Amino acid sequence: MSSGKSFYVTTPIFYVNDVPHIGHAYTEVAADVLARWHRQAGDDTWLLTGTDEHGQKILRTATANGSTPQEWADRLVENSWKPLLKEIDISNDDFIRTTDARHEENVQKFLQHLYDGGYIYTGEYEGSYCVGCEEYKQASDLVDGTGEYVGQQVCAIHSKPVEMLHEKNYFFRMSDFTQTLLDLYEARPDFIQPESARNEVIQFVKQGLSDLSISRSSFDWGIKLPWDDTHVVYVWFDALLNYITASGYGYDSETLARRWPGTHIVGKDILRFHAVIWPAMLLAAGLEVPHQVFGHGWLLVGGEKMSKSKLTGIAPNQITDTFGSDAFRYYFMSAISFGQDGSFSWEDLSARYQAELANGFGNLASRTIAMVGRYFEGVVPAPGVYEDVDTNIQNIVAAAVVAADDAVERLAMHEAIASIWTIVEALNGYITETEPWVLAKDPADRDRLATVLYTALEGLRALAVVLSPVIPRSTAKLWTALGAEAALGALVAQPVRSAGTWGQLAVGAQTAALEPLFPRIETTFEDSAAGVASASAGK
RNA sequence: GGGGCGGUAGCUCAGCUGGUUAGAGCACACGACUCAUAAUCGUCCGGUCACGGGUUCAAGUCCCGUCCGCCCUACCA
Image 1 (cartoon, helix red, strand yellow):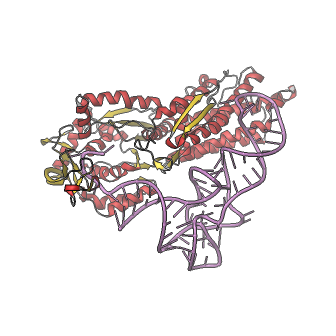
Image 2 (cartoon, rainbow, N blue to C red):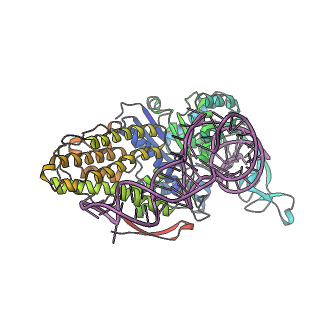
Image 3 (cartoon, rainbow, N blue to C red):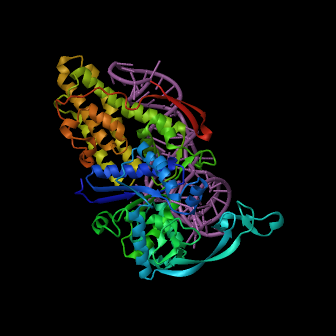
């Protein structure tokens, strides 16, 4: 399992104060599908996710809820975030919290290292401070005043003027890295993907980078600067470091060398932090920059970025409760081009579930297993002489596996699934064309019948293996029904890159009856515009 | 204001470095079949490729402009 090359993939860490929505789940699923695929490919895979727990906002909510920030974070991690991972079957190898000792201690080491290297200096931060909010405001948070404050800029929340305050801060010399970063983007076109994201970052950096204020002294819920404990480190500086503090930085150089550099899957909103600030931090510390930063798109509901305030925010369990985790994973991975924005609608989800999972893949498994049960007492029959229609299937399977692996390598999960689906379509056509139910009527066609059903079973075997990273639950059921485990071992241990090699299913193995993998679901949409749907599982 | 991306069949989207009659899935209609989750298979229907210029033997595909949509514009997520 660990003999292959390293594949270290990360998700952003959840800001614990957020409410889990399908956007979080989407990122997690994408990273998880990649991780599962690489694991089955034999790569030395590591999937990291976790939570970001520092910052003034969390301190404030915790206080408002009558608890300490640590207790507050603990509660959210256990009640919201870990359950989310379970709900959508995320196979993370580690879960880091920014309040972990391994994180806090080594963030301090990192800071000290930069400080000693001369990359951090004392400066003065100047900003518009709102006394009501007790925080600095950006220009976008200010509006024109009215009434007695006409002509002034006021806080959008309190409608009162802001004060210009000066505060001693420590700054990171990020500006030093402007050219180095541009050279990096130039030398490694795949460093930032997709192309659109790369363009945006390059244009931004070309304007020149400023130094970054990395400390705060107005509150204390954060990691203290080792040389000045009146300051805590800026939350992003803290958060980004999770990717290396989780894998040995500062305490286990062997593990760090084995994992790092990693591949970061992020939403395009936080691309800049990962593609600009983070590499600059690493360069300053003399560490390798990430292998790749991939910025995926937004999920759009009704053509707009979904949001709670517009009632388009959707909790993952609204979907999984009705359609199941596999359907959730399949839908978002197949229906949306990874990297681009994608439209979500209940109608689309429901239609694809029905057409692709239930009628396409699920029914293919049902009809095949049922015929083997009926015509061969459930025993995998020995194939006879292969004809052109049969070898054609073999070729399609082999080609699909190669294409899928190539697509996953490019993080194009949607393309991978499309390639895999050519097998589903080919097999459904194959069965219709070869008419095993007709062959079954004449004993003289017994051999031919065996060949046809073995071909269908082998196709299903390959499908189970390559779809396992995407829809782990249903493929596991299929694997059991195929009676494959005895001879081949666990599904998750099946080497995905050789899934196309024909004839792996053991002749004589006992198959088992299969309940519908994706049962028909009757849905009604009461108010699809608002993203509200009621659905009930039908039988 | 600056920057990025997009505007292709009813819907969701493919169309790479320009090259024969612009593709897929879904939906719709019709036909075949009955192993299967009223599933499957086949066929038909459907587009002035946002708009206006330009380059070219040839443009959805390159250039310019216009209109429309989404996003970013960084320091306490």
